[in-house]
Image 1 (cartoon, rainbow, N blue to C red):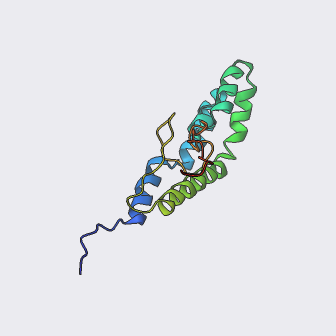
Image 2 (image 1 turned 90 degrees about the vertical axis):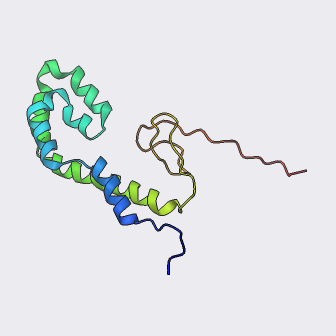
Image 3 (image 1 turned 135 degrees about the horizontal axis):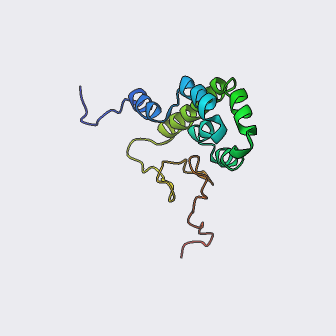
Length: 137
């Protein structure tokens, strides 16, 4: 018997969101190998600080050597990135019951944990309404 309430397939929701944010190991390796001197492999994994650092020092040639070395570490880094994204998505799906509003970051618009102080995607501070400590009259 159907109660008329739509049932969400959480596994399908997870895979849909995960496939949109996951990174491929081979792409990470190739980026580190061929464009590692410019830090493109760091931008690929949303490590913008290191990516900018590589761009700034790309004229030295040191980043080319580091990019070649880092191509051997990229599979593990990509797996770590994907695991963190999977954990974040699953926590978002499990934490928000059907019909409850999901909190979104004001800076990037991505969904965030309702108890988070900083956005997991962009690092922006989350503004919270101050708690009312005064008793109701």
